[in-house]
Length: 304
Image (cartoon, one colour):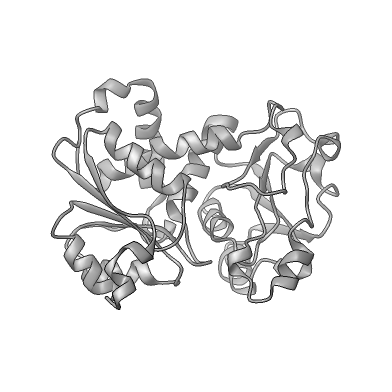
């Protein structure tokens, strides 16, 4: 039995296969509409979510399966003191596969050690978000036609941004990838990510505070919000939350085929005047998330 806790749990071959299955689902939806008849997905979200939770639920439903679970910890027995391990053991009695989001780093991994069914990490604190990374990879493949020879700008909260950490880990396996890391000093990419992923794999990167400085070089611009829920000091959040606001003016030097991405939710970091720009990919990105999660569910349930 296989779980997905970290994007590194998947080989490049497995990632490429998931992308191909997702692309086939997009063009042949009817072919997959009964693949999970009789199967049940449990969504255990100990932390708020809109896109991830609903896209998993939509994915299972479009495969013909059913969904059960909860959308906040307060509506589960965790509020009575039940441990994650016990919750997983019980829910595994009622479902064939579980996806969970938890504010504590490592909680999905602990769950996987106790589970009799596959576990999918839907985000654990500021650590990992592997299915968002699969969404991002499918988006890049669709929009750019390749996953190599790319210069990727990552902008905003690079310190706590689990989507950023997972994407860097995944893209570092492809050829000729360069990163431009755009953030204030307080939200810079953690040193362990730079040392263990970028420097260890000889990935070129530049750090800057200026979103426009390298705009003309970028193939991908990945915007992130400053996450209020990760701050201990509200004054720091207020000071940094509007540090970057992408608007049409800042895109004047950008490539005509730039792909602007965002894991969402958006707050102020992308102006709405960018939404109608053909380079704005973030709403299409959200839709791609459903298809790659359908492919992942099929893989982990070993459905041909």
